[in-house]
Amino acid sequence: MACTRPTDEVADGHDPAPRSGTGRAVAVLVLVALAALIPLFGPSAALHGTGEAAAPGAGGIALLRGVLFAALCVPLGELFVLRLARRLPGAPPERPRSWAPSATCAGLAAALGLASVVSTGNLVPHSLGQIDVGGLYDSRDGRLALLEVNAFLLAALCAIARRPAAQVWPPVAVVVAEALRAHPTTEHGPSAGSVLTLVHLTCAALWAGGLLHALRTLRLWRGDPAGAALLGLYARVAAVLLAALTATGVWSSLRRMPAATVLDQLTTTAYGRTLLAKVLLVSVVAVLALWARIRLSRAADPLTAYAPARAEVIALGAVVAVSGLLTALPLPIRWS
View 1 (spheres, rainbow, N blue to C red):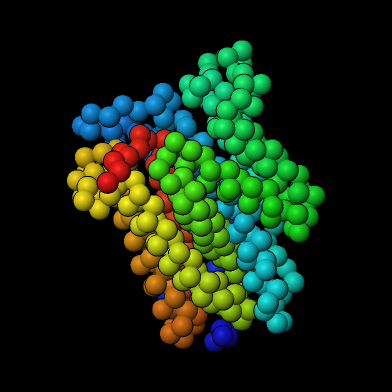
View 2 (view 1 turned 90 degrees about the vertical axis):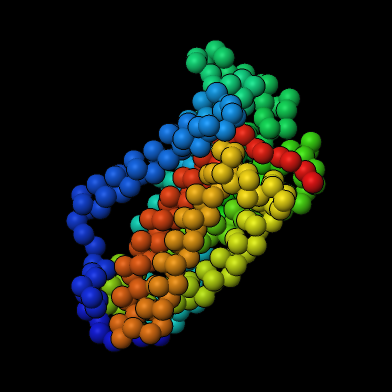
């Protein structure tokens, strides 16, 4: 696939050329601040009128989970798109500056915060003396929390040392730990639930992180036909990722909320309300993705797909924040 005109600007007034570093930094900070409001204030809104009680510090825990999920998306997405770029003949050698070191350090901070909560019996510690690091080895959740801390530490070291061959394994370990953590052994069919979460979280990280890095690469390659080719190659893989996300998401939801109770729980429980909000956001993402793919394949200039794809990234960021909130709310488990 080739661009019809190799200029810095694209049709319909959309410009993939980078803005000033200050402008981009301000825009990113504003978006991050807005995304942080979702987990911080989401628990009280979701729980209002349900009669359910939130765990202590639910807003903070939801925020830490959201940061952890975002920290998974960035390095996995970068590695995914770098692999796609190597398949393009004649692609420019330039690559965007990696955000993996910063992302994995943020993930390490979030994992440490979550581990401190686990060490106090899932209570928010108010002083360092309340944190029992040794006690983490005595419980399954504690060992999984330690695994996530160590994995993010190793991921940060690999990212800083620029070792892409080894960089993929620590985030994979975090994904596995999250899948196991979300489905305790006391749950009905924990193995099936863990496999579903493993696939769901992996696909989500590749989709969101991959699109982010693909757009950053497109900006760097502005005017080169390889940019549109890379976006098209990503789009084909993303269609498979979306199908897997939808299938695993529906199946996981039905495990939490049997079919006979879904409609009721989507409006009467905090988990159901938040899940409904996530479904609506994913629907918006899917529409934006379809819009971008149509432009990519039919427009005179394929780079007009940049604008809806950028909106898709922003919507995916909101999905990540809502996903963090979802993990901090009480589960409406009603087995059929």
